[in-house]
Length: 109
Image (cartoon, rainbow, N blue to C red; front, side, top):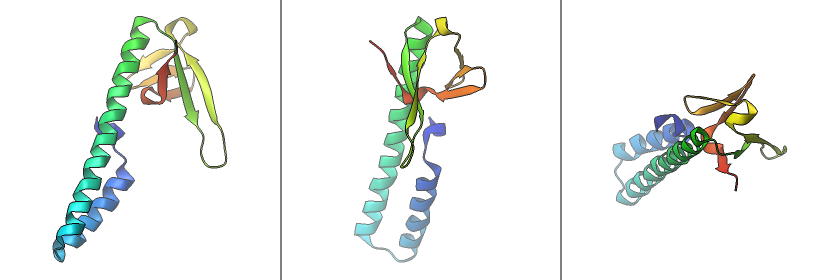
């Protein structure tokens, strides 16, 4: 599960948490702990999605996966299945030199 934690957000939150502990403020401390819990909840959600997608892949189901995308670019979309030559390596789908994260997929119906 820890590979899905947003380390930038975690470091930012921990930095401000240390500053708040130096000069205690109950509201800010509570807010920072709440945001810290949200970071771990997001990681847990991504981990469970990846586990479901890996189980579906092992059963031979097709997955619709996205990769890339951002503010100025579109995401690339791929159909992933064992029958198309994709392999599962840790929490990634692999085909030739292309790696797709298992949590960025959804089961195609």
